Length: 299
Image 1 (cartoon, one colour):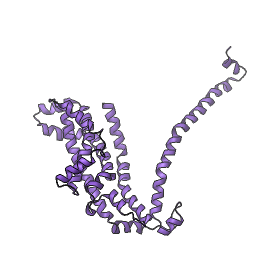
Image 2 (cartoon, helix red, strand yellow):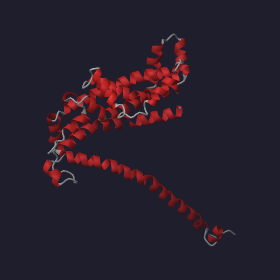
Image 3 (cartoon, helix red, strand yellow):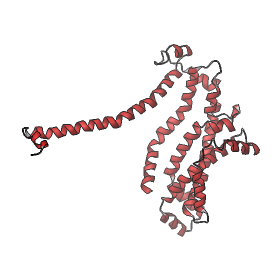
Image 4 (tube, helix red, strand yellow):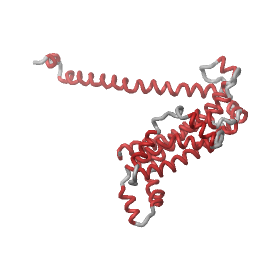
């Protein structure tokens, strides 16, 4: 008789069965703690600073210094009004919305056309063009900042919305083209071949058939690129730093005084800047996950 069997030889059958079950329950609990413990810690690490920022934005300046870590004794909503009206946050917010809307629209249209061509058409140098786009993801934006500045200034587009639009378009195009090429490649060719046999033109096949079929991938790209442009700092600082062209990140930094800073108003501005990103993520998180799973299954 083995040592394990002899250990349970004198026990009742129910007790013998209960010992492995208790061991499995203990292992299951340890496993759950090991999995969910770090996730809970990371969640607290991400959520607590946001809650502290929201509470700080509703305090008076004196209370912020005397009571920095607890919730406000009185809710000072006028901090948001003062920031929106007095610090030109309405202008900065509008500039950011203009750049996000125009840049993402251009990225999706041009990137989808280029991705569709690379996925569906055979032409000389197609693979080289695709590798050229992929290589653009390897180069950091800081490396090409000085050449871009020289080119934009030479074209007379420095401190203009058009210049910043072109910078965003060029910076995002490698990733957008690569993703759209992969998504169009995963769609069955039989659909467009049937439309071509019915006499549909190439542009009609793209706009009325292929483009709607790629909406999950387009939606995910639109969300990612919107969040990037909304929070982008370096290009906006270098290429559009005039007061009437500043986006929200640049505008927020410009409100910091050299000798004095109204921190509650500053945190109110940060809350205003953060709110659209949170709303966009909460609305589209389910669809982004669905499109990612769909793309993985198709791939």
